[in-house]
Length: 114
Length: 115
Image 1: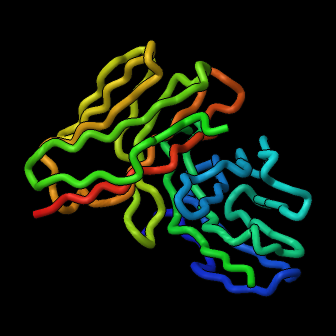
Image 2: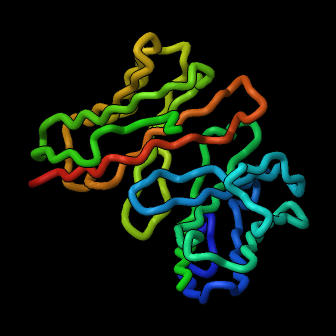
Image 3: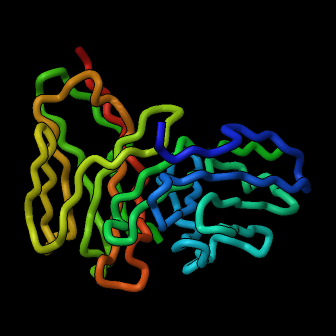
């Protein structure tokens, strides 16, 4: 399977703990996106990378959130000092630059902060 | 502010009939629109898209219509099949802007197709 993969699929943590999620995009895709989806809502844009460069960050991405794509391949999203409001599905997507509106999504990481 | 709205949380249709899912947007800078389908425990899957230079795009059983003056688009599925039962998201972007590729999604509509 050469689709977008995310790890872990589920994460339960206690408030105040740090968590890190990983996304492996489709190998030839140079664009990588992170979205967050809460219950009853559609995905909300968080940030995106072109190769290793982070090009845009949403105001939803507070200082506790940091994303990296060190070698332009996989990406990590870290949340520090988690809060209950961080509980959501975190989705990763990838695309080609020349077809960037057609994004291929991974299955997501469901985070529950207790 | 919800720039892309899907006002119907759910839709129930009989197999073989037409399903019509609606979407409204408020940002006049949006010029490219997409529909995604999502099954439980999976990420959204791209279904069909339309550029603002067109008013209709068809792909098999799926047709998207765009009414720019009304800032409204719709997805028609004909004939509907039980396997179409999923959550459908409308999304929009500004293809000519610096945030091209940043998708703004609606809240989703749960489609149920009954055999």
